[in-house]
Image 1 (cartoon, helix red, strand yellow):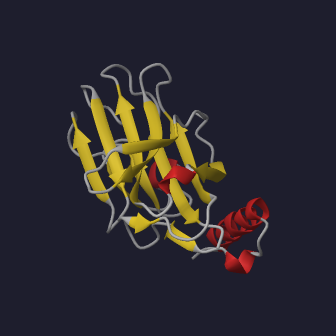
Image 2 (cartoon, rainbow, N blue to C red):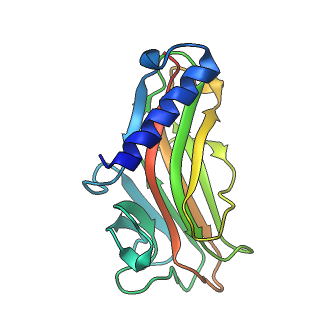
Image 3 (tube, rainbow, N blue to C red):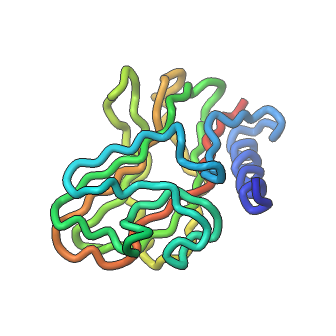
Length: 194
């Protein structure tokens, strides 16, 4: 794991410890993904445009990715996400259990450059049995600058204690425009508080 990703994970653990009043050694990582070895184990679901836009983005893709990431666009054919139609694309983790004590904290990094009027990027937790219903964790990733943004740490609803869940990044696009390179996500960590 690159140094930046290790520091990111450590920050998430320390933040969990501060919020819970426990030591960092008691926090546990429930999900960790940096996409350095690929996107295997993640489910890619798309309705609307083809081909599937979520993929494993290698270093330097579209001049954006600084390390391997999960990307949503048409690379390597083009550095855009033109579908020609309305599209809903989902990147879904393997299932994991929210064990231990809350608060549960989610952190990750992303880059986003999309049409702001029609296109949305949401983060959800899906409850089993799967396919399950979604609980919105982050209603919309708003930064559209194309630079790296860090979401750390973001509280997961305590109502999900003990639930088997899947983390989902959901892209919803309209049929017009599609300016920009799309979305990249990386360094995903979910922790408990011991």
